[in-house]
Structure formats: C-alpha cells, structure tokens
Image 1: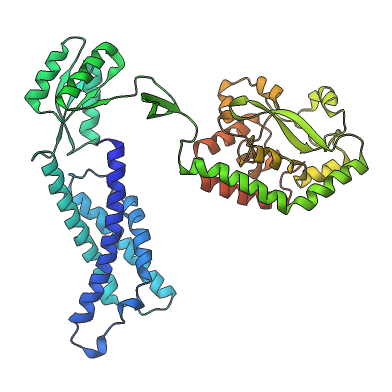
Image 2: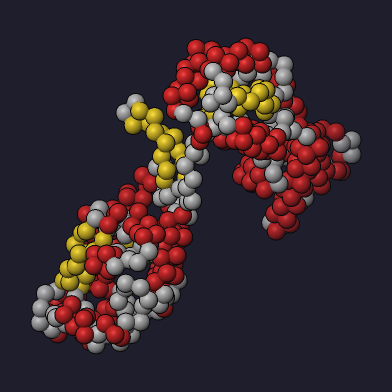
Length: 459
C-alpha cells in the first residue's frame, strides 16, 4: 500500500480508536452502575470521572503507535493485533489509576480495570470489520495483485522486499522485462492475472517503453506506480509534485512546504516587531552611548550570505574600532576557529563599550530589522560574511545556506562562541535543518533567553 494511503488510514484509525477507548470507558461505567445489587456498593455518577475522557482520547493513539499497532498490515496476524492492543490498554489503565491516585479520587476498580478489556474488544471488532471491508474492496482476495516491470534483477529485488514488508497486502502476479518483451505482453498479463496495479522500476528501461506501458495501463484503467529511486541520492527526500500541470519529482534536503513553513515567517515578523517595540528604549540608548564613546557610524553594515548564498546587508551596532576590517588581516594568525571563519578571544579591535554589547548580545539587536525585511529569521544558521562563504573547502557546508539565516541557532544555545571547530558548527546547523519544526524554533528561542542573560560562552 502506498504511503499516502497508509497515512490516511492511520489518521482515520487513530481517531476511531480514541473514540472507541472513550466509549469503552463510558460503557464500562454504565454496566457497572446498573449491574450492582448492593446499594452500599454504588459508584459515583459518570460526570465524576468525565475529566478522564480527554486523557483517554489524547493518550490512546500514541500508546497504540508506540506498540506497533499502526505499523502492522491491515490483513496481518490477529495475534499481533491483540498483543499490541493489550500492551497499549495496560499502559493506559496504569496511567488512569496513577492519575486517580494523584488527585485522591475514588478509584472505582469495577470500572477502571474492566475498561481495558472492553476497549480491546471494541477495537478488535473494528479491525475485523475493516479486514472484511478490505477483502470485499479487493474482490474477495486478501491480496492486491501487482505486475513488476523492469529488469529481472530489479524486479526480483523488489519482489523479495515486498514479501517482507507487505505481508498480506501485495501479491506479485508476474515479472515483465520490457527490454526483452513487447508492451503487448503487458496487456496480456493484465488480463490473465486481473492485476490491480503495475509497478515499474525504470532504472534499466528506456523511457519510451515506460511511456507505452503507462498508456497501456491508462487504457485498461489500471494504476501505475513508477519507482522514483532511479537516481541514488544520499540525504534528499523524494516527493511528487506538479508545476503548472507538469508532474515533477522533487529532491529536497530542506524543510518541506507545510503549515509550519507558513507559520515560520509569520512568527518571524510579529516576533521581531514585538521585540523591537519591547526593546525600543535600548535601541535608542545604545546609539547615543556609541556616539559618546567612539568616533564613527552607529551601525556596522556587512555583506552576509543569506538564503542560498544571496548577499544581503546585515546590521549590527558597531562594537569595534572603525578600521576593524583592515586590522583583521594583521590578526589572521591569531584565528582560533578552524575553517574559513575568523574568531579570536579578547579581540583587540573591540571597544570597551563593544565588549559589553557583545557580552549580552546587544550588538545583534538591529538584526531584528533584517528579520522584518525578510532577509533573516529569528532562528536559523548564523549568517557568515560573503568572503568567508567563498572560502568553504567542502561544498557540503553550503547546505547550511538552504534556509534563511537567523538571529539565534543551535550553535549559539549549545555554548555560543565555545565551539571552535567550524565542522562542529556546520554539524549543528545541519542538525537544525534536518530536524526543523516550528516547535524546535520555539525551543531554541526559549533556550536563547538564559544563554543571553547568563552570557554563556560570550567573548
């Protein structure tokens, strides 16, 4: 079964299972409340325990998923189904008992413990109904019959893999090598085996033959699944999309388009705007202090590498002497950072006021303007000067440019300037990119607050 189908079924199943577990809890209480003949052994009304329903709804899907319930085939082993249900229901019962104990609420053992058995029974019935429905959808057969098209070696490898991971779901009806047989043979095989789908492995097959095979299946009304692993990528995720009516295979290493990707620029804009308003007194006082203590511009402007390396003018409050860039060449031998990046402890170019600004990261505040302009994000890899990016000795390091640079990042909250190996710096940036979510951004922003106020790793 294709991943999109599995994901859709899993979402529906999770909702149904949560509702069934909640129904089991209500049914158990209902039976317990009417089945007792001892007036002294009555239990509280259901409203007394109703607060547990949201707990059951929320915890049921992740507990079932943790025990492999949604990873098994729909038409797989019933014993595997019951065992996964039993483990999840047992854990949920223990959690409910623990919560009742913590709130010092009467436990009603006659409800809590039988509840798990009722929940298992209800979900088992649901799965049996789903099993019978799947059977009927496939014309009375448990298996989806597929024809594998491609070189003999490719189809044999795929058949062996399907035999392991698609138990009870897919039956390989036949193999066909279009370099040795005609497309007409494919039509004959479709009729002979009443195939539900054709899986094409295109690596060693001419695209012209593949096109003919797809057209044959179109006429027959049979699905075609074209494998997209004919290019060997290392870290890219392959996705199917469309460009104005043209089907596209997308190889993406950065974050995918999602609601979180839409939320990120919104968070950036309003977060930067809020911070600018909140920090406006400092934004007014710091320029005055800079003017009073040294000559030169209030702001330091430098070309930095932005998204995909596009240069932009990054703003900082000036914390160094005015000829800092010229002095950088003279201090090159003192560089403490490996790779193309320049950093030294107790940099003599930093002014006394600048040292304080850097300690508390106040020199970075004007970059909130860069965030409002859309040139930076609140969270992302720190932007490097354009000339340092040009000196990358490993092209893989440029992948850190695949997202917008940010005010703060994993590198900063992991010790800030204590990281002296540029490869470690890049590793942290790539770890952020590969695991990005809006929640990770919020976590890094939260961790940035103590890192700034304690001046952790500042130089």
